[in-house]
Picture (tube, one colour):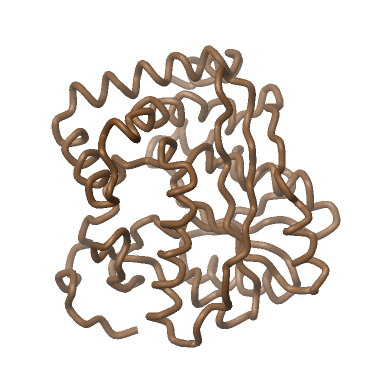
Length: 285
């Protein structure tokens, strides 16, 4: 398996994306559970399948491009769109919380930002959970701890390191639409349905005064690289944790609607962690 992973990292991007698209459709047709969840999530967001059918292939592209993203045997082209938006925030002397939903090549978002700004602004800190397979854990460790990226454990010690980084004026990166472990989230609407949502992003901003930048890294057609977009939140986060979590969910919805054909609609966004209260029940912050 490690040899196969390395082999895929050497393939051209157009070929990886072609193979990935075929893989995405194969899984869609073979797995009834995945297909039903995909279609349910699409309907929940108010789309028809014909409007976002390309997302089936993009899910496979995400898997196929991982060897290139993690091993970086050859650089990939990534065009930054309006990077001055980020530089204006840096100029304020604040730390930045980069938020990226499961859209496009989210793995590249942090890598590209680190290449652009880490030499001047310090590394971007991300949370990291090792894989169970030894070979994959080794590959992921290499991928996560690359120049300009500092991976910290998904534990209290890692959160403390994130807070320290933000107070130094550095940046951290998170996937805010990822379902958190039990006891680390709130039930909050996401495309009109309660979803268990992490509070970490909101807490980091509230405790450090950091700015929020929403990033999305879209794939260009035919393996021609990527386009990385940056946007600030339309308004400051509320001091209320529940309201702030809702604001971030709304920001993720807006970002996804700008490129719904590359979102991972098959992700189990509405799953319920064990021992948590049912959706709609009151959860203490």
